Length: 246
Picture (spheres, rainbow, N blue to C red):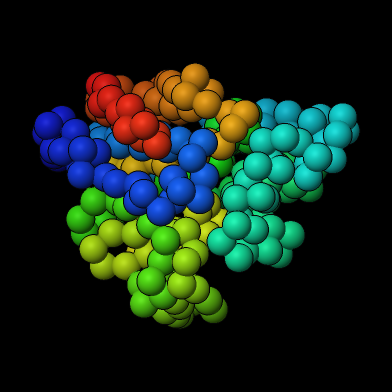
């Protein structure tokens, strides 16, 4: 189990490339690392939270179509800016919210919880197993040669992003494509995950306060079944206003 200083060092080394901020100066990322997570499959507590998120997301859609929401429109615009087609490859928040009426997926306790928090706080949120990382997380405009592993039919297939695509990566290659569209299999959470990285994204009108509220809620739910949980987070903006908190 790493020391808290190791978690902070991991966060300190995280980086958002200047080219990403040139694309969207209003972008803010909150990176949260958690250690001491009690691993496990979906359970009654995660099911209750997912059900609440389903009701919340479905109710929102009764008021207004998802694509008309200002924060969703911001992500669609950002994806178009690097050549993606937002109707074809929706950002993770939009895709999850649209699924609330028919039912969100049940994967494992960790994934179920962060999916629910994403919908309830209306923030794109990804979770990854720290043990799958080599080096620090970086958000960059892709060169096009970064290997990105996905599973299809039980087999691992390697894909590559298009040059200029916004991707999260580490020293081995891509970990999430098209900003917050699809996570890779190499760092995916499992029933055995005990150390995780959660990445929360925001574009105007969503800001720091919204990200911090979502992070606090996530930690609260993780600590409910992991009393020995240790966590730290870092906020990254174009102004480099960063901070690391326990």
